[in-house]
Image 1 (tube, rainbow, N blue to C red):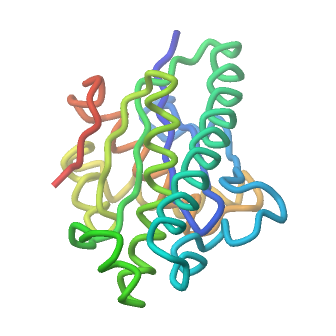
Image 2: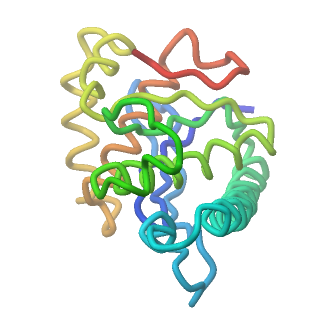
Length: 209
């Protein structure tokens, strides 16, 4: 089987996934997906910390646990479908590259709900955790990397070919067709950096620094 990796960029309630491999020293896009991380019409699920802001703390904790379980289950189901499809095409997923924000470690839930800025940060982390935990269910290792450091990771992984790879990824939409927005470009670049990295086969969840 040929090796492949998945890159993921999350949003509130959904994520963009791109699976890549390498062919002739270039990026080969195997699949693109937009996956739902919340159930349709689930009240408050798209912005779970905003929804919890005015709830009693115990109710907020319960609501967030329930939302997290649902989002993780949906992530795992979508990822399993993609892995099965690629396996049928003789590709083996070695890892998932998960794009991260540059945020600091979050405090307690009580402190998060008292700060609008922390609520936004927590919601970003919430959906990234759903992807990471969905991958864990499937024994897919997760490599986290801050999006602002993506170019640096491509240089580390691809050396002098990094600029060529960045340019190729940027223009792939011409041949692939839409969607090929910043979501897909960043996810593909992260996935390819992990694919080319010597450390992409480690089984633990890692954060690239």
